Length: 197
View 1 (cartoon, rainbow, N blue to C red):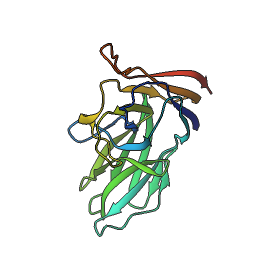
View 2: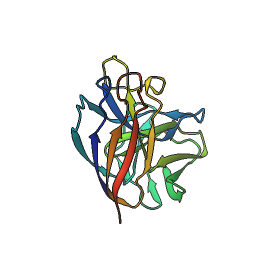
View 3: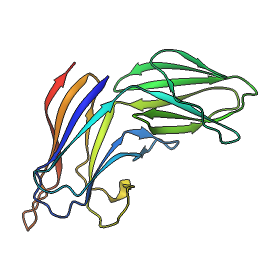
């Protein structure tokens, strides 16, 4: 399924350097890891940008020698070499159960969406592990002056907004607030014109 997304800047704050879009992926410590999917650079007032997001999931494996397998679509239970992958919808995401036999040669697995990894984990020596692929996309304004394409969770503003894209065909997301001066308000993101499939 594909979601057509339009992001627009309606904030008068000139200090917003970048806006990051990232998926709500959990790391090994169960903290949200801001794996940046897209970064919007230089977004002046009333500027907008369109994204087309393909929500289908793939996995790729890395073996112990560092070789990366081709992406494998996981819309149903799939056997891929030595591993079995079974997707199950749970809440606002999909849990992927990966089962490997004893003595396998795989090292780690990555969950991929739109060609970019969402999350990854090392595989057990034998048995199964579960990776979560969320449908929830976060928007966050980066108020720092640091350059680069990585957005650190500790450096983003307090107005992080999250949107569940499951069954959403199209939507617009606008950034408001942050008016400079003594009556400054926080930056917020607002979703509207949502079309469900």
